[in-house]
Amino acid sequence: MTEFTRPDGSTGLVPTNPTIAGAEPLAPDGGIDRAVETTTEAGLELKARSQWQYARMRFFRHRLAVAGLIGLIIIFGCGIFAPLVAPYGFAQFDLLHTLQPPTTAHQHYFGTDTIGRDEFSRVIWGVRTSMEVGVFVAVASTIIGLIIGAIAGYQGGWIDNLMMRVTDLVLTLPALAILLAFTALVGNGGQWTLSFILVLFFWTGIARVVRGLFLSLREKEYVEAAKASGAGDMRLMFRHILPNTLGPIIVNATLAVGVAILTESALSFLGFGIKPPTPSLGELVADAQSNPDQWWLTIFPGLTIVLIVLCVNFVGDGLRDALDPQQRRVRA
Image (tube, rainbow, N blue to C red):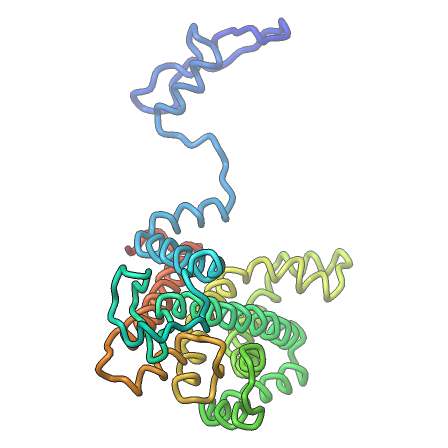
């Protein structure tokens, strides 16, 4: 044992025998500071990290996920700041430059359409519209699915059977046909009308996921201990069980953004989605069908849809690997 002096003047003893093969004594003449240095050099981790810190580290080691995140920040950032990024308004036209191919002249980087509207500006504003629809649908459907799935999974019995039969009924409906019928009934609805319609169909998937997680976790020892200590149902559900289900919920919510944008684009392309003059990416692709020779009217909005969905899927894949406690190796 080696004696050392603390800052307050008291003394203490530390072992001098190394605990790691090949390491120097833990506290030689240098005292505690040298012991800490020796421990660090030996490869021991002194700083404790939370599960979320480990998840963040695993996510940023996933190269495709990081690339997707950067792509989403750039694309969605342009949509959020569309009034500043777009050189023209989405309805502003110039009859002197109709059907002009992509050029730097007059800042028509993506060309112009049949009435001289700047395609680059319309794509930027279309990103904003599609982003608002996708994010709103993902958040709203996740909240609804979370509540229904949590109640069904925790309560069980006839409540679980009733809620899951309703969920199964919604899942059996032909979604595209019902969406077309709904949008036809509401007429020329805006983006928020379409968003609420999409939410009615998107909550079922997350509800089933949450129900399965709650059915598994409600039997765990820590839940039984909290119940024995007097915790109520609401506290058990949202204080003890819910935090342990956030990983799959976050992943499904992220992927729902891409699916919602694709669905909105498909409905707008078919003429049952967002109506002019509000631009959306699907509506821009649909308008381009009347001018098939002007390739830029189709390529740029269509490529933007592909990039958004690809980036969302990359981010979702990275989140799934990062939030999986059993994941030990980053796949990309």
